Image (cartoon, rainbow, N blue to C red):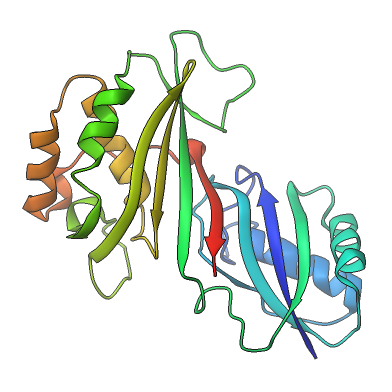
Length: 245
């Protein structure tokens, strides 16, 4: 039995999220079925972090155990064949020790949220970025974002259905930059609460639009109440970037 670590890229639009669900196709189900078609084995795939419906991945990490022998290159290419036409790609397949666990041994996760900030509608980026028409001040967003960096009670940015044992998390990085008409929000932490990144981005958008100040953001954080913070940004612009081990 060999444990395999996969690095995946996927477009989240056709999926109900990473996790298997009864209401539609998931990335997990799609991958597990591809593995079964390839090997004849029924496996359970474990991921570094579950993504919601419509959320994308540039470097999602998962693992599973397989009896049939493969090389990493053969497994990658064969899985990509069996994944077609689903918008999921195996970028890398690596043999790892049996004590590796995509979620339990993960030391950090990072995301990027893409906002296309322009008046014109999206022709190529629909479903892949959040379209915000009103002008955004990325520098003001970045300055205010530093209020959230560090160890805090993030109840104000936590989804009502979040299953985490505690709302206290340590946010290692929250940075905002503008590249042309695109505003990117980068977030890194050991782990995140459900919808935390999308809720932080939705609140920072208010700052960028001049509706909120950094002090307003601080008060929302200290309120420890979801209704005190801004709206939840759509899933379209959110990408799981990588997992650190």
